[in-house]
Image (cartoon, rainbow, N blue to C red):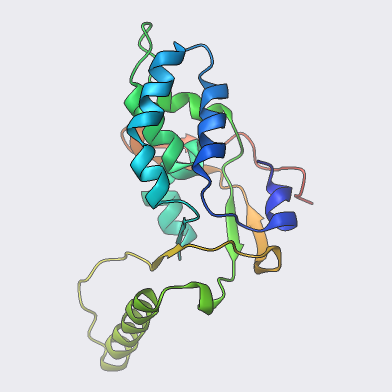
Length: 190
C-alpha cells in the first residue's frame, strides 16, 4: 500500500483475506502447503480481528518501543511469517516483510465516536492523573506508555493530517539495535 492511499481512502480496518493474499504473494517460493497450513492456523484470529486497527498515541513510543511495526508492517503478516518459521537456508521469514513498504508515521485525528467508551475512560484517567501530578508537583512512577486505541471502523481520509518517515527506528527483532531507514521520502512527500 502506498502512502498516498491513506490520504485517498483513509485508514481501513484489517481485512484478513487481503492480507492472506498478500502473504501468499510474498511467500510464493515457499511450499504452498506450508503457507496454507499457517493461514488455516490463524483462521480464528482473522475473524476476531476483522475490521480492527491498532493505533498508538505517541510517535516516539512507536519508534523507540514498537519499531518492528514500522519496519515490517502488519502484525498479522508478521505472525503468519513467524509461524512459517525459517527457510531451509535459515532465513527468518519475518524479515522478508522489510522489503515491502516504507516505514511511515501517520498523524491521525481519531474521531472520538470511533473510540470505544472504555478506552475513552482510560485516556480520561491518564489525563486526570497527569494533571494531578503536575498540579501537586509529585510525579508518580507509572511509566511512559501512551494511550493505545483499537478502532473497529475505517477512519476517513480527512482525519489523516500528515506523515513522516523516521530515519532511525529501534528494532526489537534485532536486539534493539537501531534500524536505519534508507527511504525518507515517498510519492506524497514535498
